[in-house]
Image 1 (cartoon, chains in turn brown, orange):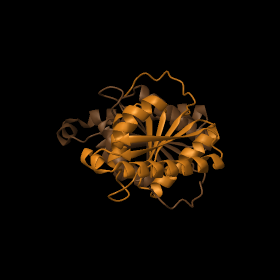
Image 2 (spheres, one colour; image 1 turned 135 degrees about the vertical axis):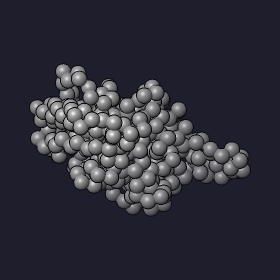
Image 3 (cartoon, chains in turn brown, red; image 1 turned 180 degrees about the vertical axis):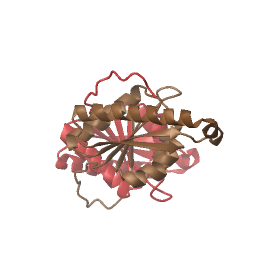
Length: 153
Length: 153
């Protein structure tokens, strides 16, 4: 155990939130969105909402026609805008949509986080194997992102 | 992407916190403690603080004399009491020390969580391999506990 006990508790709040959303819009995603919006509203802090167009598999990526890619981008942009509008209507004043392309965990950890600089990343648990497991993307972000991470169940 | 967009954002707060502390009392542990105490104070919600006497390796366990085991239990109890007192002095009104024995992740997931029933587990990142990695215990709890989990960095 630590022997150094001469420390003082300091109030701690997060100041910049990043919520990752994706195709698995399950109950945990909804709760993650509720939590992100609540924090952004109460503390009046910026909230980025990121969605990644998955192009991790190069063969799949290459097989997508320019038209299909363009359509997917539009779909993601529309979906993100819905999230942003709902968060703003709820009372979050500084909400920003962010679209990435590539492997979701890599894009978020290596591109979005260094750019947006959140101190808290908010993820749904996306249980694919029952309530007690988190998804691969959430696991990778939790392990590697240089920010605090909350997995909402 | 999800097509069902007829939902309303609901305010979301956690109502019962569990903070895990251990020997690695590093910067992230201190921040996790700050965050847990802040939430417990602001929302006036219960905070359990758990520390596990590691007896995961049966050979090590058996090799510990009763006197040594007893001494370790006393050390952990004293350390937990320091945490509880600091949190209470800070303004958290319902703080409870919890001592476990065994493999930390298993004890927390299978014994402490079902008993204490937190909806948020708060962990330090305990970077053993640099700032960007979380410890084995944190990873296992994040994957398997039936509660939301925040890894504080």
